[in-house]
Image (tube, rainbow, N blue to C red; front, side, top):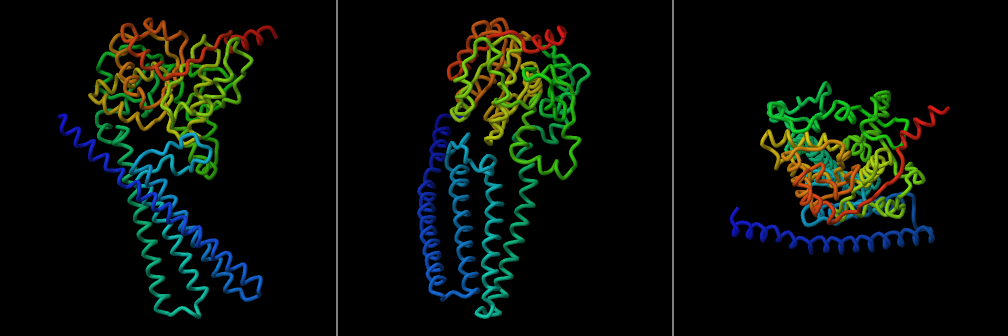
Length: 451
């Protein structure tokens, strides 16, 4: 794109700030409704105290208060959701009071929520008319009912249309739509293990030489439907077997469980479900507990910083990475977990299919990516360059958590000539956490053998 075109585009994009005063105007309108609410409440209290309020009046007054509250809720949804969608991010990530809907809000979701809120407000108005039916004309009742049904129909149509639109947008964003399926996007294999759709490669990728041998043990590490049961808190992704704790749930409990944070946790494809609180801080010989407490606040995700866990096998690197990832999911962030070998397969497949740029852009939907087990398998120059592109693309744009068995100064042993430039970008805004100690798994195995 030429420089004049780019400048013009940026100038047009900057006009979004013209909407900012509009949202602050809505804030002022919300203040008016706050005044109206307390004015109505004060009048209700006065009439109740003086005995001038009958049951019908109290019911109508309460419905008025409910109406004001619902309109105020509608306003806050438009102010917060609209501003974040159309003007600029507010940066509530990690805030304890962040509304659940804001984590996945977009113009489509916002329209549906607004429509349902309007239906709720309309239903309150209609109820007021029926309660005060003796003072309401039949003409008003008829048209009030017709208008309310029109609101319901429009909300239903919007909700119906939002499903296919959201599905189409998700396919386009992630690059896993039917068109790609025609290229064999779901058919990537590694050994005898089928790679899941999230990390599948195209047939073109299977025909191209894959620069790193990915053992079936590695790719199978997160393929279980819910590998959230394991014996050791420090076992990494190569240590988990297949479990089916979700499959044993009855459908009703499954549906209620598969919402919000739990949906994000399952979509992240963690090898196990670990909590930061479960981490045995006494096991590593050298570990900065204050750093872990600071990372647990997830400020690094909002600041688009990175975290690198370095230490020998079995010291808890994967546990900490997963624990931070789970907490990020609970805070409303989209997270994606994979080992370095699995990331290599994904990026190699995308490059072979000619969609590497689209793949990197699609990953922007995840504020946090986790790259586990860096260093266990050295990569050739082509694959190392792919990792460099991943790190460079996310530099100051989104966060990475990386776990590895060797310090960044020795990454040339893994990535060769691409290591210096990659480390420079990764470490520039990063928290480097070292863990020293013996393997937790070996300690348990030795203890079991002694017994």
